[in-house]
Image (tube, rainbow, N blue to C red; front, side, top):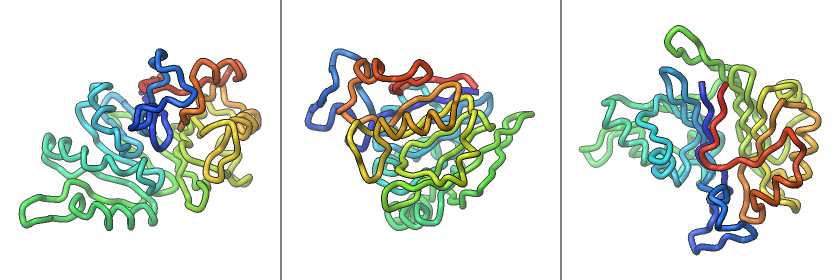
Length: 256
């Protein structure tokens, strides 16, 4: 089973639409970042986390030919607005794709992208089947099972969902606060992928200092910083990190 970081950039990506790279060196390919999304790829299933606005590019670059399920972290545009690119996978398989989201995200998706979930224009069939995220989900993969635990965290004024896969890897792309009562879920994992927007304080995201502080508390074997703003040059950021921590980059693949 593989975990692929499809996109490692913050809400405007790097470079921005106007070509601005900020502090990032455009000569380093790892500084080219699409918006956050990720994929669990097993022998039989492709489970997508969020539908980034850059989803089409991410699918093409990683040669992903099918999507079996989608799980959402929250309802912000940089996590949802690539949803239309799921149409091709519906057309290819001729069946609706199960989508999992919390109540707030479900309401947003139904309101904003209603055509994806119900027949529209008397012509286009629904492409997605909306389901409620459960605290623990099991997905069958041939003769094996993939366990997915969902933990609610704070992301500024909204909630976001962290997903933990097979008690090995946690993915927390957008977070500003984790309740201390949930710390036990994150301790001593093999991999911790965590939000790290930039160096200074932000009300909706962890900065570098906050991310490193939690990494020390949770003690994963390896931590990976994602949701990286154009303030954070890959090479310069890597110099500042402990040995078991690295910056994410688009296409980074982890074997589980």
